[in-house]
Length: 239
Image (cartoon, rainbow, N blue to C red; front, top):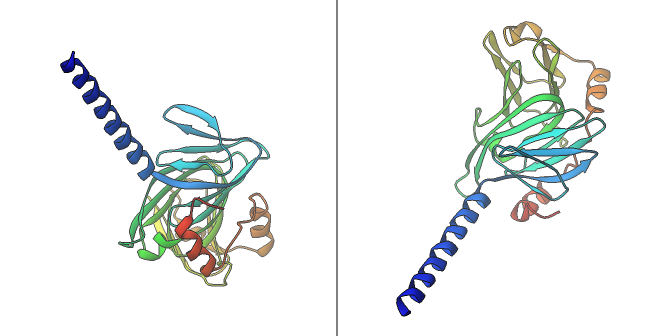
């Protein structure tokens, strides 16, 4: 009888340890937090589709989709901010960040939809540590902001460099199988319909009206000044 009791206690202990390990693993993969949601937005995780709610945590490999007249605002683990407009489809392919070691990388994949982005800490650590993949090119983000729209191959994809809310301008590197180009001026961008098009040949300065029309397809990012962002990064799950 005593031996059976000891076996039961051992089984309970093993279960508790397993649950704790699994819980820690899941927590360590948290990549983003939902700052705001409008309309119908869903997350596809391990084959299951569920509605997204404000304040919800998102994880590595999560796929976020928005329906018509819907949008989502996200804050990534490193403080990057990204908003998606209607009919968007984005996957958090990978995101790792260690603020103490000042190390990490981000890999986002946008299949469709308009977007705005303000890069956070990871993009400032190195030139190739924050990537945004679209159907026609890979975007290397070097500490800056951009607006754009991803579309299926054969339709126009726009990638445009804009100034940060504080006025600074970084760089964006656009690369595909046909070539590579660096964007470093306000309003500079490319329009591509196919990954075989050379981005160097489509590089140009976009008119302010065009950029504004594109930006209107996505909610404006709720930007915070550096001091507030540094403070809030200590409690980045909170509002």
